[in-house]
Structure formats: structure tokens, C-alpha cells
Image (tube, rainbow, N blue to C red; front, side, top):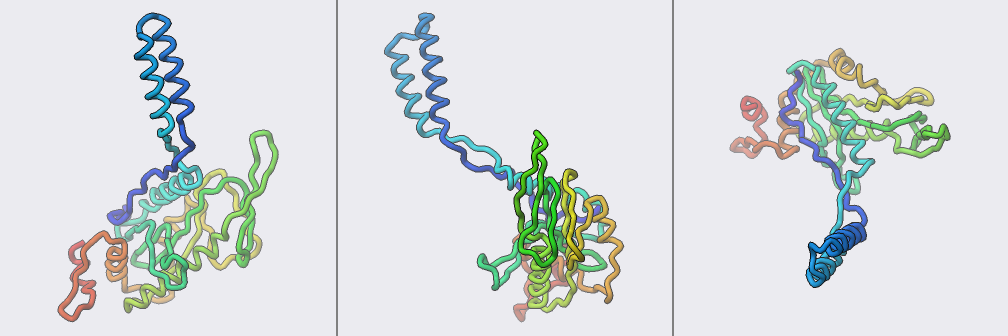
Length: 262
């Protein structure tokens, strides 16, 4: 089983809904009237309860899961589970933010990073439903979904191939700045069983079926021997703020000293 020590637990994404005051007020009024009519509630107390219900109801929000973000989280969890089939010589990272001076946010977020004896891999995860159509050079891809009544409707999504390529380049540059020269492979995975991808032409980044992802990574043969596995794991662990760095007297990262402690 792959090393999942550095996987970050993803919390359920929630968002604030519209105010639930009307529901609380209505329920309180009905309950107060029923108790008053059956003689269990004196009218002064019923009035106090009503006033409190109006006050509290006007301030009571509710919460729900953000459907789009929830879909993404579920997709990433499915891919995480699939990658556990890799041997223990592979290490997994998720939701990794890599410094990127060219990004408006200053970082590039990568869904999944896999480091093994045969290289470094980034995985861009999508959990869309429907038919996804697009070419490698396009900024957006088309998503065609079929409704319950049989009608079709279209939407767009950012080109996942461009995203995956940009993420791999960002990680490669970050490793180079740390003195680690490694080629970073990238892949796109659509984790939803109700999705069919129809790429238009050859893509610069492969789209790999979820059931084949672990096998595709394990059987990859690099053009040059990959000898930087431990330093890459150590550096990304530091980047994820999951460990304390080990620094030698000259102020440089002591990758060997750190990795012995994993």
C-alpha cells in the first residue's frame, strides 16, 4: 500500500444558506397556538415565546454542502483510494500548494502528487458528469449533460489538460529552485463513472481512466534513472507544513537527515 502519511484530510465543504428565520417563526407560532388552545400555555407566556422566536429566527442561518466543491472532494477521495493500490515505495500528497510567482494567488494548487522510484507525478482530478469534449489548445471544454426528462444542456469547464500541464511545470520549477532536477509527469483523471471524455485530437497530457491510474504510474519507465525520491518527499513534506525542517550549520536543507526520520 502506498505511503499515505502526508495525505491531508479534506473536510466537508459547506456554505451559508439563506436565513431560516421564517421557518423558525412559523413553527414557533403554530406550537404556541396549539399549546395555548389545549390549555397548557398561559397567553402571557405564549406571547413571550413568540417574541423570542421572532428575534432568534431573524438571526438563525443554516448551512449546506456546496454541491460543486463537494463533488470535487468526493472525486479526490476516490482517486486517493485508487492510488493506495501502489506499493509502499510510493508516497502520496494531496492539495499541495506550490509557490508560483506567475500566479495571481502566488501559488498553484495540485490535487495529487505521487513520488515513487520511477519519478514524480501530478494528477488533476475532475468529477464531472456527462460527455466532456475538448482539444488540448482550448481554454474551455464543453460538458453535455442529459436531464431526467431526456433534455440536453451544456456548460463549460476549464481545460483540465492545460491545468495539469501548468501544475507539472510549476512543481518542476519549484524542485529546480531547491536544486532537484526531476522530470514531472502529469495526468488527468475523470473519477465519475457517469462521465465520458471525447478529446478532439492528440492531447499533451494523457487522460487516464481511474481503474488504470495506479498501474499506469507504476509501469511508467523514465528516460533517465530517477534518484531524487527521498529529497523530493522531504521537500514536499516541508512545503505542506507537516514536519519541522532539518537545517545543517550552513543553513541548507538537510534532506538526508530528514528522510532518515520518516
